Length: 219
Ligand code: SF4
Ligand code: SF4
Image (cartoon, rainbow, N blue to C red; front, top):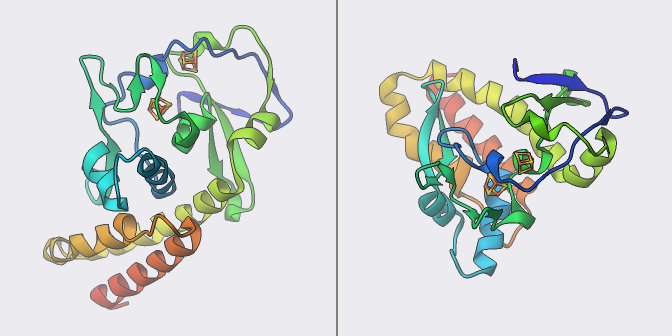
């Protein structure tokens, strides 16, 4: 958070994208597609005939990692000497319509506020900050255009689930975690039908996974 400053919906921010593509480079280990992003991207890529099922997205475009050493996640693949996002082609995003939430919100980020009732917005003050030079955008308009209701619902639900799952993962022994890793990945990432809406599937998966893990750790 040291590279971000708070902004309010009513703030005007000087910003103009020069389509330089810099924010899509040097991304190795820096772009984590969330499950909603992955579902959207998989549907989009299926239309282009590039995959069939949800798990194909993770196999083709991501690699597995562990957040803070204990939470299984997937990170976006990169390509080339400048570690460009795997979807950057000829300096442009090839999945623009279905790009991840963080890409749509950039140069801002959003986090759920207290009790998930509202969001806090931040302006990213990274090494691309020269794009904050001319032009003018209203934060509220940017969020209206780029931060969908589904994104907000997911982010709110996910922040609560991350806390609970984190507690359960930490309560498991290393052997229990290893034995159940596939099950965790299945419910977190793979068990999504691309022809069905995302949120009901996500909620059902999280409920089932939470119950399974609670039984394992005896809660
Ligand atoms: S947001 Fe900034 S870094 Fe990204 S393409 Fe636009 S000008 Fe370049
Ligand atoms: S998904 Fe598109 S916008 Fe996002 S980092 Fe990759 S190329 Fe850039």
